[in-house]
Length: 556
Image 1: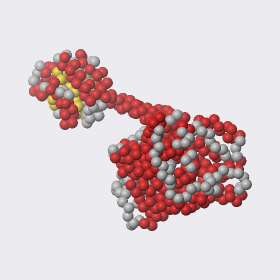
Image 2: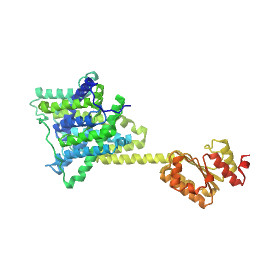
Image 3: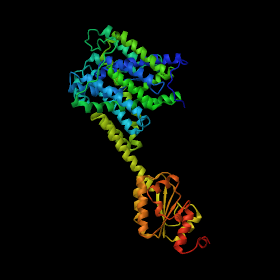
Image 4: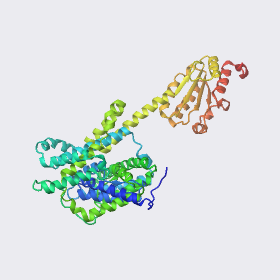
């Protein structure tokens, strides 16, 4: 596997073709996400240009195409709605400041080298979160799809208004939306290889509006400003600073997850290996500059990345050429987009929402595991109806608790108290013979596998039956890792055995385990002659002492 993001010109044709193809796909998506977010179509375009350029230049995944994505747009939509409601005059500027904060958080994550930990999240949580984001995008696009403007208040208010939207829908705009969806689903795969279905839908819907529906009072994008973006200096208000920081953290974390999951897909397609920390820094720089220039937040986009790779893109030059092509569109061709119907963009965004939902896992989650299904559906509903970060936090906590419980059960099963010769753990004939001679006066505490706090309870439970024995053998030969809590449980058991004048033996501790036992002063409580490398030697001495015989007599 190769780690690289160097820009070279050995694959110039492939990189340029990949960039052109990705740009063609990015244009309708950027317009749709810009309008959907409430920040305007131009915000989507500048987000696509700026994030795509800086993430390609400074990122750690050569073929990654970065731009506004569905999940990032959903969060940005909520931020814009909330900020404008709180402060109509400066709300939009505060929203872009939040994008800047998201970029700063991502840069910090990269500098702290947290990239490899970002995607260590249970799939049930990721699936529920992404499906929830898809549902939010669908709900928020139903109004524009039916020819209405969504009320302020987000998902809940949009759902409340849906009955009235349906009864008072605009037939012409709804037909345009349905036509868009039909094109997106019905365009043959062979044609999609040459022209993206989103672009076909965009052009078809616009031409129909211009030539056949010019008198139908259809809502359109309107004039998009040309020229370089206006600089948006960060705007803060003390009463909302905590909220802005939290929203920036949510955006930053979501962008990290979105980008790195797409980087993994890019790795599998190109047989390379991305640099996670460098990628987070590149994404952070892109979002920081995008926020300063009034652009939407973005992340690695799966569709654009896959298309780029399939078209021949192999280095960051493909991402840079894509950004340059979009820049030309923004600077000189933006007026051509003014007649695009909002219903067409709603149809494109609606299809994105449908695609984001994890239908495959939704269909089989309940068959795989009831607990997994509960977590997944719980995260999905919390994402839609409450809060994104709360949904992920609760989902991760629930998944971790269940995982810890499962691991604790496994570790408990690996703590065995043996006092008879017929135990299956005794694989050696000599061990069985010696245990038989001991006549249940020796407890052999057999530990195997990593011993953490999950095993501590099982060890403590075995301590309660020490009164029944005259010798305790603790076999650690199969233990590669000994946690603090489990070590304390062993220490407590040895102290209890010493109080009861029970002879104590330790077997098979490796170097790391010995160091841990020495740190807890456990070795000092066990005589040197009672420490062994193998179980049979310990059993020999223990049985000899119990019987008052010599080792030679025991072996006879």
